[in-house]
Length: 224
Image (cartoon, rainbow, N blue to C red; front, side):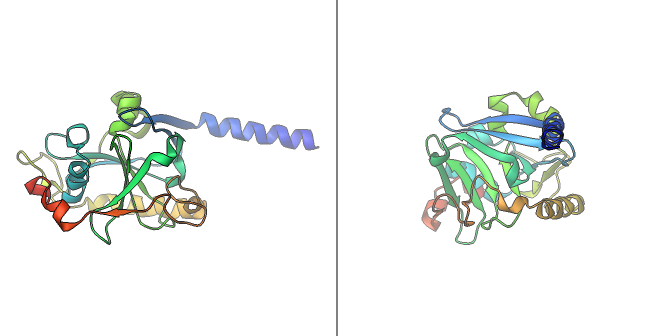
């Protein structure tokens, strides 16, 4: 009886593995690596964001050339926090807030690679990961194959170097129903308890550094 139960569990795990896709993640210097796993049933959310804060984040890390496109856009993949894990370099993760109440913006301390953003509380089941490190670790086509191509460009009113064709001036409200449904599904599956960026008590794995007004004033004029 126990043998058959064990065999059934192995078969279930094997099937789940077959129905999942993985992407490798690597920072610029290679000290930090990770893996993102997408279940076949999970809906992909991917957008290029031109908001001032996403641009400021890249400039604050001196990573604008490797993070932003020619219009100041950041390619962001919206996933469940439970789907991302670090393989090495976990203790090299830093945390920045652009204001005292701003989003948590994660990066590596070794080479200032932007990782992504999250809410300041673990119970919010969302993680917005920058696509660039996945492209560097694999390829642009591999990222497209797993998470699809960019569907929306948002906050186009903040784009640089001229208007961006097809960009929403602000958020893309058409994404909201799907995003809310994804949040609820993740919460029901208990994925709010699992995040590589928060410890078992729900506290961030490192102390956030808040960017001062003086520091932000030194960034590119359009994202101050």
